[in-house]
Image (cartoon, rainbow, N blue to C red; front, side):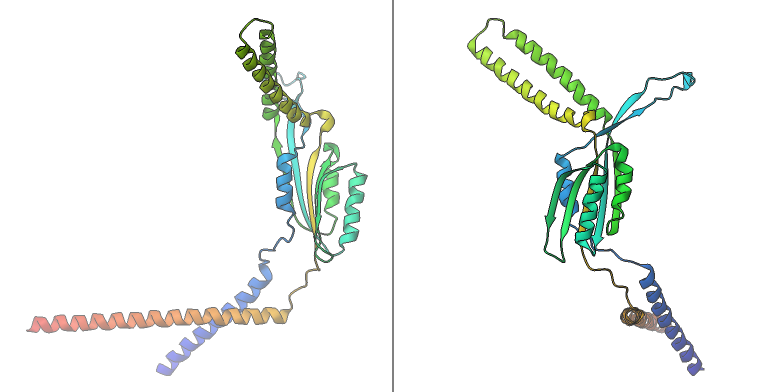
Length: 289
């Protein structure tokens, strides 16, 4: 009877080991893991984008449910559209030439560029301005360069920001006109000096606003493509023998942890049961006395 029980326990442990082993093999095929992004261009381009803004606009026709049959006055939406493309290349020189040819083909502009690394570990990062009409086609064309690791497009509405800048400009222009009118009036020298400083501050703010509003000018409309590419060898597939070895090592390790846990849990349960039996025996003996 005991031999049959031991056999059943042994069979259960063997089946658990086999199940863990098979699970680890399947997991190795299904889980790709986190791929290390060797391109350092993302942080570089993110810092550049903070200082170099590209904006575009498109006509929007507001919907009027009360008068759907009439023609409404079309408005204009200002927006910022940024695409991020990361690529890995095993033929870096050829792919770099292809990138430049695509930029030339779509009449795009390289606004920032950084190249680093020696042969075999080269990197290139570009901030490219593309006209809104050609943005989608250009974005798709860049995905044919090297092996694409990640892509992303972000579109942010900037209409309210544009309106606020214009409102601030109008307010500053009115203030400047008022200050200039005060210059014609009599007053103390100290007042004229303070007035001159105030006029200088307002003019400086207007110049800064002019630069910001210039980015929204229809003549300077661009969408942004952040392209980064790093050089690396082609990914080698993991052999089946290697997968079996890794799965076996993992199974032995965690199977040992599982068996040890079961053993200590059983030992703890046995000790607790013994203590309960001893306690009951002691209580029963005390009652007899």
